[in-house]
Image 1 (tube, rainbow, N blue to C red):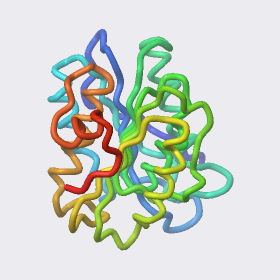
Image 2 (tube, helix red, strand yellow):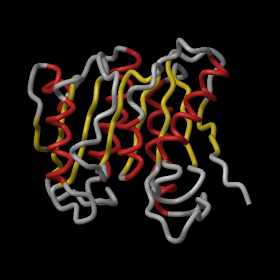
Image 3 (cartoon, rainbow, N blue to C red):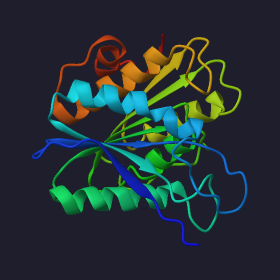
Amino acid sequence: MKLCPRLIDVHVPREPEGAVLLLHGGASRRRSMRVSPAQLSVLRMIPIARRVARAGRGRLAVFRLLNSRRGWDTNHTPVDDARWALAGVAKRFGDALPACLIGHSLGGRAALLAAGHPAVRSVAALAPWVYPTDVASALRGRRILIVHGTQDRIASQSRSLALARALSRHAEVGYVSVEDGKHAMLRHHGVFDRLATEFAVTTLLGAPPAGALARIASGERLITV
């Protein structure tokens, strides 16, 4: 059975000024296992998608991506699915529409590795499961935000910090460390959701940054909240 990714419309105005694509996480259970719309890693992105749609005030097209399969393997990764989704958005609205990728866990890794796609203007990686070498090519002009909890026992914060330093040589990178935040982002979920939403609206629509994002814009690169 062929496994294919699926793109879910959350809010799609007729003439959007930007597109936001949400990428879920989720480890593999067995080889080539299909993604379920009901798995927790997928459901976790729904409130963020809705929040972005509200904050966009009808100016942003918001989509959730369901990957073709769970986890990450050498033959096909969520990065391939993210690029497929970006191509689909471009087919609907044209190549000039700028995009923001918001990803959690392995979805954060996929978002960062897909950041070199021509349509991508910005990436918000939430509790990303990454390696310090996950640096995509063609990152000039990209804006990247990494948000990671200090109590994450699944995705290494030290690795995401190392990656942030590596990425900062190629793109504008801000890093927010969330005190007592865990991998599922249930504790302090409002912090994760709000930062991702405000980052998308700021980078795509030019909204003035506030709070932690304003501090990043003023030159701070590592912030604890």
